[in-house]
Image 1 (cartoon, rainbow, N blue to C red):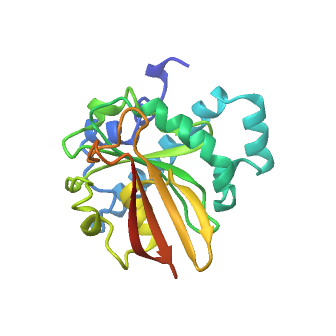
Image 2 (cartoon, rainbow, N blue to C red; image 1 turned 45 degrees about the vertical axis):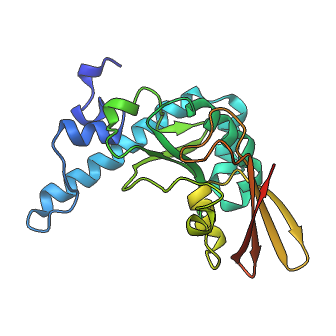
Length: 225
């Protein structure tokens, strides 16, 4: 279908582009329930339109998995199955200077999404041509950094990843790409920082770091050579 035949809100390539082009600063308008309902309806329609377009580009196997409810993105239970696709996605977006962080996130009984955090001053005009709204059946959520993280060095590690920090917070700071080793009463999360390009804010002199978790919280940090 030609774009000029589509409703105007379905001509955009992302929710962010639609919001800026149409000057939509909020979806909540208590004083104008008609406007609020329309915006919510258009938001749902645009998201469905972007998903339908993405669905057509998937392999037959991936479409069949989504239809059958077995696709890795559909539940937190697919976390291990999703890891290879997440690594593929991270490599796909890795070489952009505006990138701050790429993580895979989910909650109990919720879908798995790929979350991309971009620099504070990066708008959709900067990243839209490089970061898709969906990737192989996974939703991609783009957020902007509120502040810059402190640099991870041997000297600052205990401040960035202090004792008592939860495992979930470690993932939020360092990402989910950790090798997990289970020991007696402890879990070790080992991050390797030698793959190109290095993650933002990591000292090149830190090739790897292991975060030791006990009872769900950080108790130690160990560095590899």
